[in-house]
Image 1 (cartoon, rainbow over the protein chains, first blue to last red):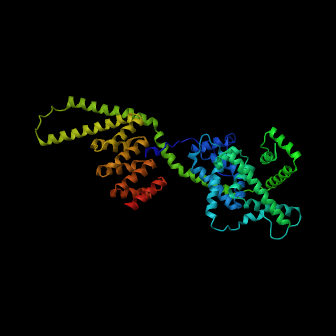
Image 2: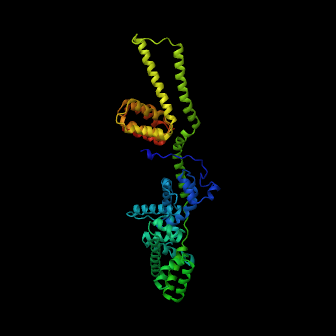
Length: 214
Length: 273
């Protein structure tokens, strides 16, 4: 029982990010993600504000493409940062912050998919701007939007695991070593899965293009 | 490089993940092989299409919610931090207390001895009268309590780990004497270390059936400032079914200035009692 009462460190606040409108302490600019997360782990919770500013955009982009829903992606991003706070003590000295963040993101997304497996997904009004209307579009802009919609459909037809590895390898500027850490597999396996997912996407995408033309 | 080897490397070549030597080999093969060139072109088109997907931006609500969550977490930590800071704040007072308390007690004893030998009437012969006997008993009790104070002061002069070991050593004793129980209650009430106080409370658990233990913990509860120890004490009193703790728990449950976890523990305890 005694071992479960750690000493609680009290340190002076060196990171001052009290609200989104306030400027970030310049001292945090020079710190790496890893150093910031170590500070959060040691009780400097304001350092999480800087990490949020650096990473919430790419994480949101990844999750929008993974789930196909903006609202769900926002919820998952919030849950990821919530878990970072909750499980900050588990962050390891030798860890990579980005890999840890996507690891948490993947777990939160899996929870989301599990919860929504049985329930039909409602149309998210926020998604409509990214998709073409029912009426035919004229001109190049409409064609581009059609093409995006086609690619979204192709992505959604992939297995979730394939979609995940493809998005991690293409958009998140992660090495295959980091991706392997996130997916908890070997580097070779991560690479094979990413390549297979890309070929799968190509097949579905081209098939959809053919169907559209015919 | 044959077709299979080339096609295995195409995604990496298109993503710029191949080293220059391998890139040159792949490109040399592509120049000579229309099948692989077709595969290269199809994968390249797919990747280009992926790259042109618009970059989604989250709504301002996400930032607002995340910062609100951060502030809430900071607020929830504030009382714990304040409690953790409490023992370290008057560190110099603690040191002075450790030095001055035993010295003061020793001076008191010496002064008493000196005054007693110089001014007190000669010692009465044993078995004289009941009033003298009672006076002697009271004097003996005072000396005992002075002895306990000296013991406690000396105990606190030791390091935290030594004091912790002392407390833990009592866990092995199946039937500790009243002095050990009194020492444990003393540690719970007076020790500056949270861990020592918590371990003293642990050591008192097997003896919670003794009224003196329950009233000792109950008397110490209002003095305690650390939420961890407060919650542990409440749990102790509830586990001991100490109904006399109800007024104190009611007071804690109503007190808005104390830690939320303590209030909740008090409310839980009241429900169980």
